Structure formats: C-alpha cells, structure tokens
Image (cartoon, rainbow, N blue to C red; front, side):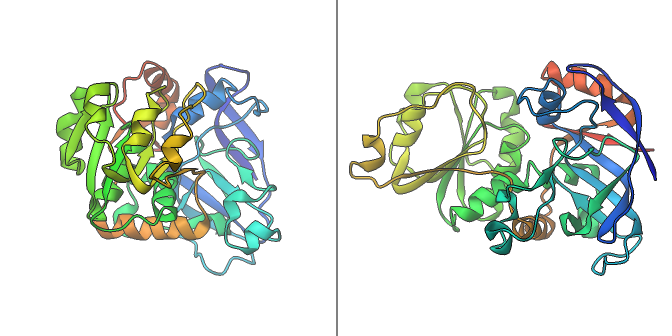
Length: 335
C-alpha cells in the first residue's frame, strides 16, 4: 500500500511531500496518524547530525494514531484502538536482551528514522508489539511527547529505584526535563530544578518544582553539596559537572539522559571518597517500561506542555525549533 508523508530528501533540506510503498505483514498494524511530535532529535536527523541517515527519510518518532488495519497474527489490538508509537519500532525478540525484556538494547532493533519511515505522515505501518494502547486521557496532542521524551527519563528513574520522599534534582528543563520533573513530583519526591532560564520559573513551580536554581551559578550549586539521592541531567549544555557530583549524597546516583557536546570530566575521588556514588546513562526504555510509564502518566494525568501546528506547516515548525522559540515540545496535528 502507498503511504504519504513529509520527507527530507537531502541533508538539511526542507521537508517535501513523499510517497512510499509498504506491505502489511501478519504481525503489523496500519495506523492513521492523529498527532506526531517534532523533536530536536528530528531536526538533528534532518541535518544528519549523527551520520546514520539515508535520504530520503520521514522524521517523527513520537506518534499517536488510530488502528485502521491489522495483520492476521495481531491479537491484542483491535481496529479502532488508539495507540502510541515511540522511537523503537522493532527488535529481533530472540537475543539475550530481548528474552530478558530489555528490547531497547537489541543489536537488531529498528528505529525511527534510522531504519523506518516516521510519523510526520498520514499513516504508518508498525509492529504491533511496539504499539501501545492508550487510555482515554492520554489520547491528546500533549500526551504525544510521553512516547520518547517521557519514556527516557521515566525508565532512568525506575532503574535508579527512586522512592517516595527522596531529595532529587533535574538539570535542564526542556522536553525531557519538564516531564522528568512531573514524574518525580508525583512520586512524592522533593524536587530541585537547575535551569538556566528564569522565564520558566512560574510554570516549573506549577509542574512540581520545590526549588529552582540557576544551572550556571556555581556559588548557588555549591550550597547543595551532599544533598541529593538522585540527579537526572536532561541538559545538552556543558556545565560544571564536579559541583553536581558533589551535590550527591553518599550512595547517590547521577544519570545522564541529555547529551552534552563536550567531554564530561570530574575527579574520580568524588565517586569514591566517603561516597560510593554511581554514574549511569539511559537510552529510551523497554516495552515494559513504556507500559509502566503510560499507566503512571494516566493515573496522575501527566502530559507535556506543547505548541501545536498543522502537519502541513511542518517546515515553519522546524524553523521555530531551530530558533529555540517553542518552550518545551512541538506537536503536529493531522486534519
């Protein structure tokens, strides 16, 4: 069948209408797309920032849509169901990691848009095992960023075994950070936010921040030495990482989900001396993590702060994103 979307045909180009053909296999779904996020990662893919893109390609890795057709082996999802689709859309289901329920580490995984066309389109065909039925309160444009920008910090928080009452911090409040803040707040943690933008402060308090500190004010950061059980950095800036490592309690955990452009360095003694601190990173999450995240977000009505555009204004949305105009997340809507 033919599927029409918006594709980048060369590095850094504007998106143009593009049609491709794809057959529906027995375990796949045809999903009519209602909402698709435009992420900063999508903009980087258009520019081939990581060097793994084959043109033409269709971006869009956070998708909500309605199932229109399904293959004969699909049992758990019905035509008419509303589903969410994220960055990962396939794995081998045979390797050690897949059998352990950690499909996000599969070396044969399929990703949007590295291996598959994405969701800035009229429809998409996806493996039913990577399509997740959504409760009614998450069938909204503002729920769309949960499918990657929400999954990534949620899976990290879960892996770190963050618990109620912990003193935690979020560094960088963008598309991932403002969702991490909400997750931690609803877990009844005391949440400190380190942000470079004072213009967001009132909104951050509404989202659950107990304390807001400049991420670039070293003197203020020094006041938090040995204060935090867990710190998650969603920032892509180069910061004074030694101060943040010092801000961990003994046995505290620091997690990177943002990707700073420069090497991250600090003295190894900060992890060892009177400390036993841990450093971890996180990459999306498993299918189980996705289901847990969606259940948690539904229960606590967690959604992103979004700016919406009609799908046919995708190039205008990209230009605004390149100029850092949207506050947190952008969602494209199909008529």
